[in-house]
View 1 (cartoon, rainbow, N blue to C red):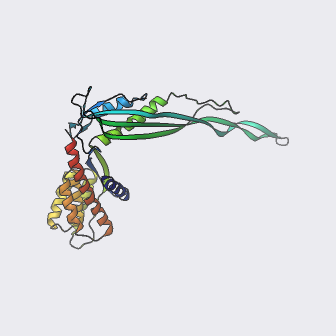
View 2 (spheres, one colour):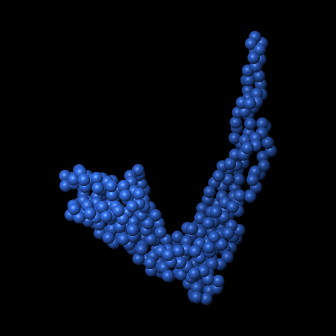
View 3 (cartoon, rainbow, N blue to C red):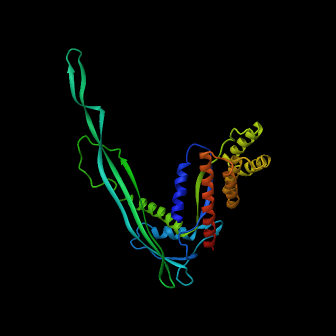
Length: 330
């Protein structure tokens, strides 16, 4: 159910990603280990690890902080340990494919035609030079398992894969096809690049086993509609509050919007919506949810209702996630 809700939220994020003014919302998410509270971990050396996967992950676990609280204690033995983290680097590969880019060298002529009358040489064919290039692809796959030491029960397991690629052309060139080297840079880049990929896998693992924040941008309502209840001054004040929101001056924007909301007796869905955004951005999710629900009763416009309903579903989900995540922290 949580997965379906998350997919729905992500699809709505893409739907509302455009050129409109945005405000950044952060939301605390729970780990994927829902039935166990894991605050102390012993990290065992990963099998086949020649890319610092173990060190990268252990360092991130030891330094993981949420809301100024250190999430995990890294243990050296199993005494008093909530979980043992084991793993294996299943793949750490680098493939190199050499090819040549053809380029006309207008500075070197292969064949000339000489005009006897004008005594002018005209180049009929220029040399082609062959520039060596290399297509590189790097792949890393790591599998992890979290085990409860008291009974060897598997708490969590997952396999992570990531890759990157690069194309490089070199400053040397040939006028005839040279001997094809197996590769030009050998495997000197493999450790560096695959260690970086291992580090990104460590980040993904940490998001799965620890509470964490996610960030996304949500559309601001930029102006009041043509309802005759709004005065010109109120419209300007609303637009000023939007400018404050765009600049991150949320306290000032909140003050202006709450003043407007009082004047309008809670009858403006735009004011209520933007006010809800500010409360959501400052982690007051229940107040934000109440304001979104109030705004929903005041408009029938489909686009506006989509924004408001997204706010309601988002805050409902994030309220649940916040409660779960808080229970997982030490």
